[in-house]
Image 1 (tube, rainbow, N blue to C red):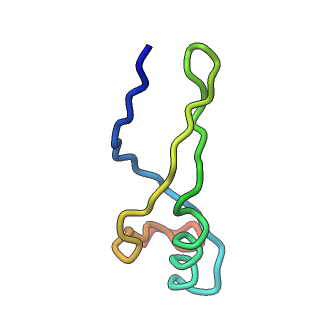
Image 2 (cartoon, rainbow, N blue to C red; image 1 turned 180 degrees about the vertical axis):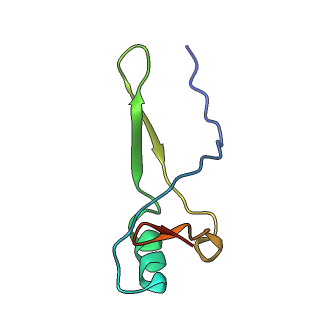
Length: 70
């Protein structure tokens, strides 16, 4: 068997509690980048893991504030 590495573009929606939008963006950059994420398991039971990297945090779309669409 061979192991293949793909550069896959994924999208995520992350809720963050912070005092300001800038503080929320900073938290994402500091704590999400480089993290491992688990999105379930392969048919053989092995976990599906991937490393998370934020493309450009300043251009992330703000969708809601306190549950209200913006």
